[in-house]
Each structure stands twice: as C-alpha cells, then as structure tokens.
Length: 483
Image 1 (cartoon, one colour):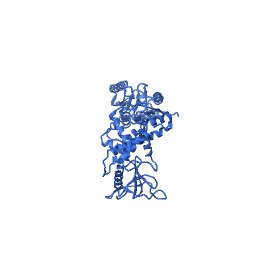
Image 2 (cartoon, one colour):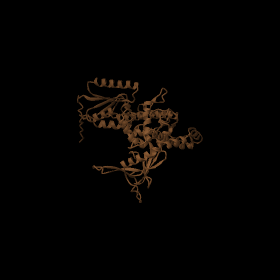
Image 3 (cartoon, rainbow, N blue to C red):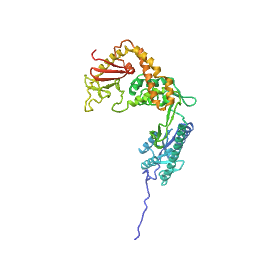
Image 4 (cartoon, rainbow, N blue to C red):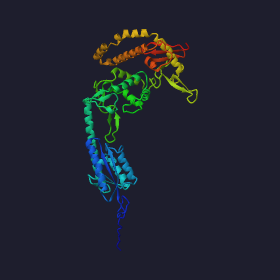
C-alpha cells in the first residue's frame, strides 16, 4: 500500500513568527552615517536623513519608528557609534522589525562587527535592507553577499588608513610639525602654520617650570593652578597631575619637536600606543620660538628622573620631601602620621629606610615645627653672610660660567653638552639665590615656604643635636637645637 503525504503550508514567518497572512505594518527605522565633519559630508548626511525619513513614511505598509544617525564617526568600529548602538538596542528590545540603510559600508566597515550585529538582529526577528547592494538579510543569499561586501569595505578602510599613515609619516620626515592648538598651552597657529608664542599662556608655562624647579610636585602645582583659576590647556577649571607632567616633559616648549611619539596599532580598533621603537621617530631642532630655555628644560628632566621610583628617589609630595637626608644611610626622610584618628594626630619625618637594614639608622625623627624652627635659625645665619655670598658670586660667575666659553666648548665637543647644561643650571640657581637674599630682611622670625624652596638644597640629620642645612650655593650651616 503506497504512502500518502500531505503538505501543511507554513502559516508563520520563520524569522518574525508573525502570521504569513498578517497585514500588520512593519516597524521600520532608518540609519544614516558620515565619517567626517567636512562640508561635503555634511551635505551627504543631511540628504541621507531626509531621504530615509520620507522614504519610510511614504510606504503604507510600514510604520516609521525613528531615524538613527552618527555624524563624523568612523565605521571601522561600532564601539563609539552611539546612534548605531541605540538602534541595535531598540531592535533587540523588539521595537524595530526592519532597518534600512544606504549601503553595507554605512552599516560597518568591520566584517566581524557587521556579521555579528546582523546575526543578532536576525535572531531577534529584525531584518536589514541595504539599498545600494539590494541585500535583504532574511534572504538565503544575504549573509554571503554581506560577507563579501563587508570585506571589500574593510579593505577599503585599510587602504585609506595606510595612505593617511604614509602621508603623515612623510610630513614627519620633512620636519613638518603640527599640534592640537585648541588644547596646547602656550602656542597659537601662525600664518605659515607653524607655532607662534601666545604670551598670555606662555606665562603659565613658565610658572609651571619655575614652581617645579623650586621643589613643588606636579600634584601641588596642579592644585595651585586650580586655586588661582587658571584654565587648563583644554579650557577646563581643574588641573590634573598628568597635565602638568605633560607640560614639563614636552620638548616643544624649548623650541624642538619630537614627531611620532605615538602610533596607531590597528586601523580597526584605532588603538594608539606609545612609540618605543616600533616605528621611526623624527627630532626637529629649533623648529619654533622657545618658551623655556633649553638648559632649564634639561634641568627639569634631570630633576624628574631623580624623582622616579627607587630607594633614594627624590620625592616632592610635601614641602620637606626630598629635602631632608639621613646622615647614616644617605636616604631621604619621609613623612609618617602618628595618631591619625584622634586629637593627638601628628606628622613626623624619619628616614624612609630606618628599619630595613640589619643595622638600624640611629638618626632621630623630627616633627615639622622643629624643622621649621631650625631652618629659621640656619637662614638667619646664612643671611648674615649675604654680602660675602653676593661678592663671591660676582667674582666667579664670569670666570666659571662665561657664556662664550660654554658656546666654544659646545661647538668643539658634542660630549660636553651635559656639562654645559649643568653649568648653565648652576649659574641660574646661584643668580636666583643671590636675588632672593638681596630682597630679604635682616632678620627672619617665621618659616616661609617659598624661601625654603628658593634657598635650601637639603638638610642632613646626623643626630638630634646635629642637623645641618646645605644651601644652594654649597654653604653648609649647623643649626643648634635649643639655642
């Protein structure tokens, strides 16, 4: 006896689960995107928005949901495309049945992003239509065509990225310097496109360098600038430590330019990485007017290096950080808080490595008031020698710090550069010390933080009754306790 087969027709759409005979209107959204803010792209963006809004609303079998868009956003990644991500979120929530866009490249130039997003939408009953390629994602050939078109779009992005990278590196190799002027403190764009000094902002730059050389930390400088109401390079009110550090380490402030400090690792993710030798760098000397003298810049770099992590690093967190030295082991004193949670709270300073070695350091701890009082004693002794100090500096500065001699040495020996910088820094430091001394009264009766930073190199603790202050001219003064 033969088999009898009866066909039972499908009654529901296998993607949407709606009845095949249903006359329910499809909820349709449009998506528009341009990758730049250029004028011609703006026209394209406006045209896309207008076209898809009118197109969807003109169909009687469609219900217009919303037009989603991203303006001036690349399609190599969906991560930063807020309009696109909101559209996908709404579709997955069941608010959209169909998404219409101009082409596969408008949707995504990243093949993986494109396919994964379309599959998620498809699993949730949302179809996509790409008008230029005439691709419907519910069609059996849709995914194959999208894979091919997305791959082509991705390769086009790769080609554009490589061309842009080549052009940028060619400009670097030619020594052409460009900075983000809207977020770069101290310079404006000149008529020739190069950097010209903005004197108002340059004063802030000089202030930052001066404060750092006086001993203030980047954190403290940031706090001071914020309190004074000075705007950041980006025009914000609050300064951060990292912003101050970036200014202190940027060679452009001494008139030079290091090009290609960072590079883009991957054109899809747009991830940037600090250049540690992976791609060429280019150093342009004397490219533009300097705000900071080269020897000042170099001395700041040396001081920053001294403050890096290490057993004897020169910290600058507090007013006495990197200024008090242990006479036993040579390490710096650091601050410690006693009774931090009660009324007996007290800040003391002691050797950072007092209990680390087998033989413990015998140097005592000191409280801040004691340090200040001892400094005032030492400073009064130092001021009594101001005439001799000034005369000695005037006698030696021409002999030891002659500019023409330094220039000749620089021209003759490239290896002498480091010694030249040291001498230039020493001369500036001595001149600042003499200027500070001449402006001081005959007797000082209280601690002044600016004077401390300006005059003292460091203090050395040998014992509770043997503390010596070394001033920036090399003079060491013993400040007896209790006298």
